Image (cartoon, rainbow, N blue to C red; front, side, top):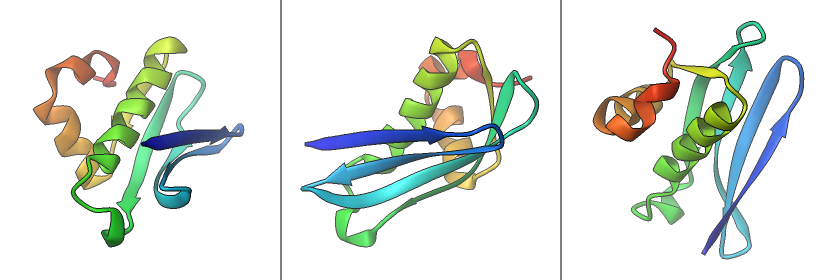
Length: 95
């Protein structure tokens, strides 16, 4: 089982994912105005690879954006391809 913690300030934020009581990875973002944020990095420790944790981070970011009426600009290659491959996430993309 994994747990995601979100920290946000006026300029940057991070979603951290924990698995088996240890930090397994994170996804960072930078605010681009009041209405959107740029996902700039997603990383999961190789020891926790293959468990879908990176996708869970991107989904958490999309859910946060949806709940707060924000848009997402995925610059991180992993986040970008995850949005492209999952139509259910695309409603929060900034176009």
